[in-house]
Amino acid sequence: MPPQRATLLQVAQRAGVSRSTASFVLTGRYKDMRISEDARQRVLRAAQELDYRPNLMARSLRTKVTKTVALISDTIASDQYAGRMIHGSLAAAVARGHLLFIGETEGDPVVEEKLISDFLDRQVDAFLYASMFTRPIRVPKQLRDRKVVLLNCLNRGSFPVIIPDELSAGRDAARTLLEAGHRTGIYLVGHVPDQVFAGRERLAGINEALGAAEARLAGTIDCDWWPGSAYDAVSRALADGLVPKALICLNDRVALGAYQALREAGVDIPGEVSVISFDDSELAAWLRPQLTSISLPHYELGWQAIETLLGDSTEPAVQRLPMPVRRRASIGPPRGE
Image 1: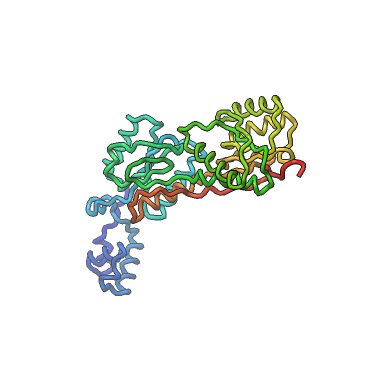
Image 2: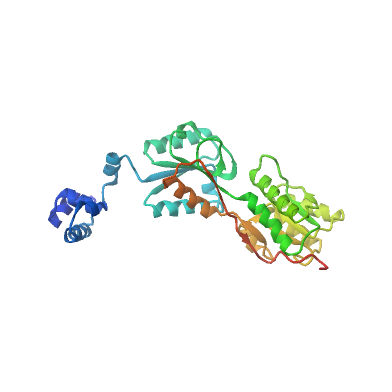
């Protein structure tokens, strides 16, 4: 049988104080109770000697606070890269003395409803509702009267939102090329559907920054956001006589396909064509030359979501977190300049 845990009464008896005095000391409320430093030290010493641990279940029944939060996501928990949002959330929860429960739905509404019900049965204090890709969502009915922060997703309701600043990221991608001297021959690589928030925002930022410098995209090499599609599209464009000076790829997988096509065509990066991308996944550092990429701040998103969830403000504001430029070796001055 496991050893019986020490009780608060046993701590008080060993310290020679009342049970309420021991409680005030161990919960940090002694300052307003005129408890002497000697008594406080005796209580702390007794608690250490008895290996006292508070009964959190009993405390939660009394206070209606369980010091637990739940993260409901579609697939971020099983994605190695986006999973850093989980790491950031966990670290922030631990820093605030909370436990974080994690549930993944894979987009199944039945699974989602069951997970939320289970978390509510466990009386979690608050919820993060998260998405793998930044997109509009509907908050489940079970959560609409709860304390909720939306992580990497958007809603027109009254909930705080934490998302990456994709608009500024687009501006920074264009400005990075402009600072290197590029004004012409800049092509976007990737398809931008209206419903894809990241692509739409990135393109708007690119156009805004180029326009401010009296420059513009020379065109778009249309492809899916995947290496094979990007490789095929860039290969066709080069075979048809396209001579780009710079490529802005909508993510690192697109950049991988573009790199392969450029290499097969004998085009030097960055001597003949500069390449910049978004996401700053592990691919960016693996490619040769290493790829300049705009970083998705997954860890920071998770951290800030917990900070907002457990903070005092309940304002339904949208917080856009900066996406840093990771400068590497894939950008140079325009050829011949």
